[in-house]
Amino acid sequence: MRLIKRVVDIIFFKNTWSISYFFLPLGFHNLPDEINIDKDQINIANSADPFFFLYKNIPYLIYEKISTIGNKGYICLLNLETRNEKLVLKTKYNLSFPSIHHINNEIILICECSESKELKFWKLNNNFQAVEEKNIINEPILDPVLLTKDKNFYLIGSLRNKKNDYRPTIYKSQDFINWSKFEDANIYINKGDERNAGQPYFIENNIYRFSQILEPKYGSGIKMHRVSQNEPSAYKETLTKEIRMSKISKSDGIHTISFDKNGFYYDFRMRTFNLFAIFYKFIALLRKKYIKLSLAKT
Image (cartoon, rainbow, N blue to C red; front, side, top):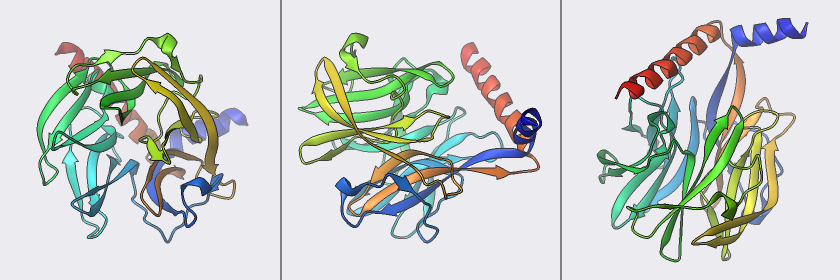
């Protein structure tokens, strides 16, 4: 019976991600333990990894848009005032986990592009169009976050050992051009907490990092850690909270969080029935194989 259920699940069910919003009337220190999807709030279908930011006092959300066929990610932007969505960046390899930063009077987009075997950034113009691409680090870093402290830039991410098994990696720079890597022995991140779940958040002189709960499966929830040491050569943190989807929710996952002044945006996973699920999975597998082979040739 278990085998039959597994086969049916593979053939007829697929994961879909969407973005929603959770209102926090009492502020950051009253984060919930569980979330149930509020259907009255924003719901962006086939999307994940939301990042909220303000530009010229206009609120925006940048995120990964996921194609139905191929399961390939590209980067889109939503003006939260007009609700207009626009394409920001699309490449032949998968893009996800975007964030926007203002560095040296320039708009910088950083996102995961691990299929390219590098970590890159893109300079954007005032219309959020990519005008320049630059390589930062020659490693396929997952879920990169940028932390700025004491005039230093810190890139915090992870590298995949194998499925659901990762190791943390941290780089430091003073000019956003030259990067030095932390020794593994100086990174104190617990096993299983390596994958980021959103950009670091500053409040009351404290820095909080969010990580994904990987058990029983990838994107099962979010952990919040208070950074207890962040120096030019060492990093430590302390677990403070976990957030999961409510047991009464139809969703079984949440893996990215991003705050505005009234609450936070998050993504949630739904397991949905689809007659063509196995076809979509097969196309996604072929796409990944093709990208791997084509990049190897270049």
